[in-house]
Image 1 (spheres, rainbow, N blue to C red):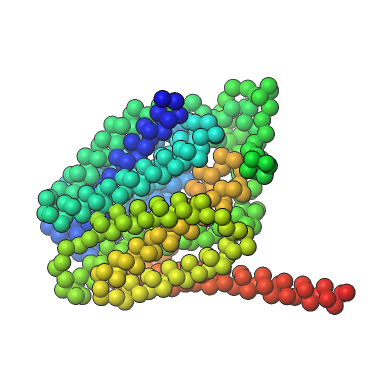
Image 2 (cartoon, rainbow, N blue to C red; image 1 turned 135 degrees about the vertical axis):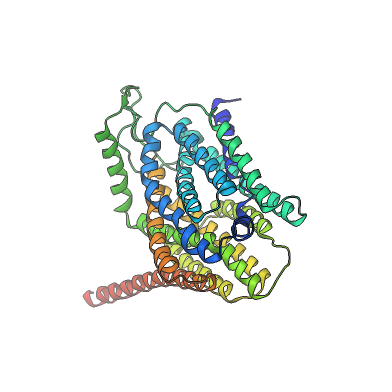
Length: 445
């Protein structure tokens, strides 16, 4: 077995174990029933928002520390944070302990950057496409398996919601143990580079698709550059190169705002489902786990198909973003008004699939137009912007206004619709500019 394949399989094993959290599809039911007995208002206003603030504050720091410490340490700490989260979920009984838990959950989420960037520092660039597919598949496999296991356990009353917490703790404990055996990384993207890795250059098209960094192998040196100033220069170069490119800015803008909206929907959709159950006095079996499995698998298939589809995104991107954003807004608005669990489930699946498809497009359109090896940085910055916006929304909507779940989803629907209208205005502005320029050329002639 080739070394890069072995490393990829080890990392994928960690990814599957880390994402095997069967308690998550039913976390609301666990928190509002014995032995926890929190109210929906406490969960909505006092507990859940803390993880968003923690995730936001720790993301950029975690990214830089991850690069400086060369990934493995952060991967281990990430798994440890997950273990702490579920120990607190099992043994904690107060709002304060749940808030402490959410701090660690925010760190746990921020630590995912180490999982997604470790492999790029460990294998040669020629294998990047393959290992990206492997790590993404491991993530999706873990989510799909955990949703299916959770659904089976709940449907057939194999265990209680508390049992799901113990099962999740077991998976994360195995992930922590597994992480210890991941190979060390000798170099990283910014703080531990080879001198042969010259200042990054933008990918430029050639006959075989693209050209990466120029590198003279005869002059390259294996001596590492540990200087903080050199790392800052590399980071600054990558940032300015990316965010002075208007095409990148356009896709990153949608990426950040759509990610913010998706985070809010994912965080509070179980509260909406609970509100529908209460409003209809429903006691039917909940299919949260099955829904997670379905949207994970369908989203993965749709994303892979979209990656193979040949579309001129430079000319059609804004129109597609407009239609998809408004469509997502309509889906969320209908979810906020429906009294049918089936409708709410189906629309949520549609929402997540469309979001995954367009995020796939946004990711590869950004990746094609930024410096080599800078994707992790741009991912971190864009996600940070999304979390800042989400934190503002949560502070206003959840903490200050204390909106119920249905009203929250009405706001989310308006949010995505406005995002679509922004891109619609961009299309109209471009058309008007073309008409104006055409008229000027006619008069000049």
